[in-house]
Length: 440
Ligand code: ATP
Image 1 (cartoon, rainbow, N blue to C red):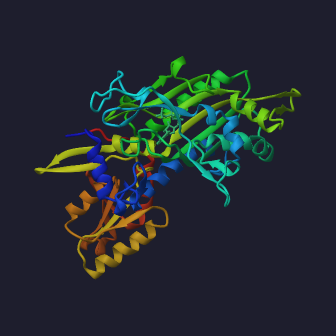
Image 2: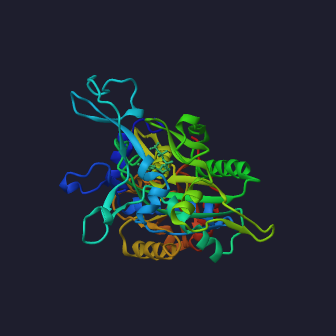
Image 3: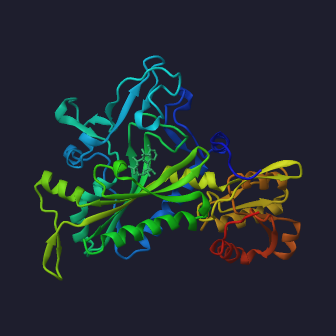
């Protein structure tokens, strides 16, 4: 009983309930590309919304942006991605399988024990062509991170929004990496979404801001219900740091397949802006109108994956319990993340009950994503909602026609309250506002 033991259980649930499933499945699927169905897209939007609220709107010195996926190819020369964004690739001479050399133990094939080739550096950027002529001059890249769009735009945004250091710019969007070995469901795919925030500071307080953002980002997962004992901060060793980074701390989660990075908070120094200044020939210094100084700011970055965060929330929320000889599967998702906030049921398919339940559904749908279900026993309907993490289920029964009250059932405690229909919106608001993760 209890928590998620293997990823396959979650993959099966995600497919069955239309959360996430393989892309192009009728053609046999395409390795490591995933589609989000009706409930998945709601969950994903909620994850992004929670990040946007906490990282951008909550701060008066952080603003948002949405930059293009295809950028001038010189961006990637300046950023170092053309030369350095590589993984060491090895092939097994016997079974022909490919691996990332830094992800396998020892120097033999983990699959068959065969001899491996010497590592070759393999660039992870997807290439394509802009315009009708497929020659070298027309070659462009799909961005492997959203950050560079922020760096090249930072002065335009700073001036337009009249920002003073310290300030931040964040964005959410697709990134593409031709990963050598994608896998573990949506943990590592080749097309994914990132939520990145670049924070521009001076050398007076760069360490302070680095630590502050590490703490702030770590707490975000906890506030959204992830069990703290399954999260940790892991500083990178010197040998592990990316080509641009001075320091990096990963937020890691204990997945069924071990501790892995969900988000990285990096001290990028002046690397990116200096590089873009040199390659573009444009002055990218910041002018401090109080001291009269011109300088290149230092950048602190918080970089999270939408899909990886979503997998973290799903894996952590998964719970099973015995209920009258059956297994009850419950996603104990924070109400802020739950794809459906409230489900409305008429006790039976009787016109008077259906009409009242539909009126309530319509009213609640002005604020929330609401499910309506009139099929099967109430017990089964509860199960269907538990399995996708709906925090509240409302039943309209015969007595409701007399007393204008309904039964609201809590997903976690399964406790039921009788609430007057008029009071339902306030009741739900209050429950969601004061939600605390339930520990049976
Ligand atoms: P790894 O070492 O796991 O390849 P990384 O350190 O290269 O990851 P970053 O460049 O720091 O990853 O990317 C920032 C965030 O973007 C990661 O923490 C992760 O959440 C997300 N991310 C990166 N690559 C992928 C991917 N292939 N699939 C899904 N999410 C990803």
